[in-house]
Length: 449
Image 1: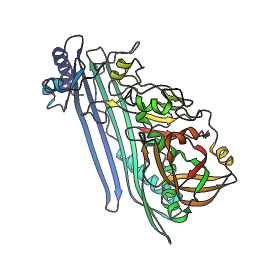
Image 2: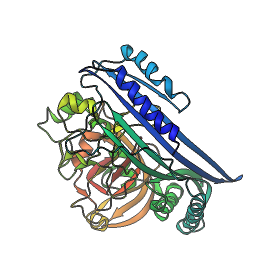
Image 3: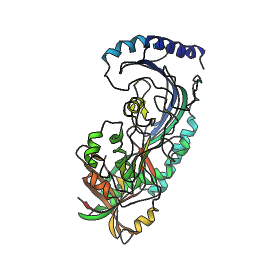
């Protein structure tokens, strides 16, 4: 730890606290330190990119308005004057103030130290392992064009004039690969992604199987027949759809839309078999942490409980303004941007779900959507969605012919209320700002086309 930068944090906080005094004024000082390494292997060989981050971010609050400024250690001494100059131009927002500690919340005054540099050898081992798994999953028919593996760790600290002092750390890892396949029908390539909290938690074999299906099914199958069919959504497919629902629960921003979809709360939002949760503690979730970007302890929050809207995801201002619980969902996408409400791991709870085999055996005639071919289209305001997938036809509870195209579209609310079964096989994909997860979902008698 650099003593001069430890003193800098304390000095900045003292200046910020002195600048904003009064019942509706306050300050929040945030610091982040981190390392990240990315190793890429492609046609031109191996390249390594590494980066460090050290920065301070300050918010000053006054009468429901705030000013935000961020800088590295060299420019940090100007943060107070920069933020103060922006306060009068800030948007007025009821409840906007520096966070106070929750009842029973501990004070953590630990100064930050620089995290250890990621192990490049382990990253290279991950690439070697994935290349091997692609060879097995693709049975020689799938080639790996490029693969990048990223690993990083960061440490964060916050102090507010409301009395909150906290420090915490987190890790992240990801793998991004471009795979290709060729057959008599042509050539197909795709990009696949997996994220996890740590390198060793990346499921390489599962990603390799997913990548092989992603490029082989469009080349070897036939388009699905139009008409009604039972639809099984693979967790990788369902998770992308579930993740698109998260903005409905960002504070009170979508109250009118939720009221319209549920007739003011009188109707369920989804089928009663669905409980939708946000939690940084979800097993297998790519996001893992103890506190959010405002230092609030993270919670497990059920936003939909057996079909009915149950809660919202909040930051400090939303919790103070509405009286809803503080859920720890203030997300900082970078250290030099202010926090905003976002998900951690947003998923369908698999508790009480059946095994995927049992769900499959219940289908007499239907389709299994195994992989997405395009980015899902979801319009929450218009209540419409469209998925284009590839997979398999299902006959008498067994996978039959390969399907190169399975179009699944219609009214989103109707689709969600039609889910009749869930699996116990929760899987996660990367979402816009967090993880999105789902088990296998069964929707009977849906019109394809």
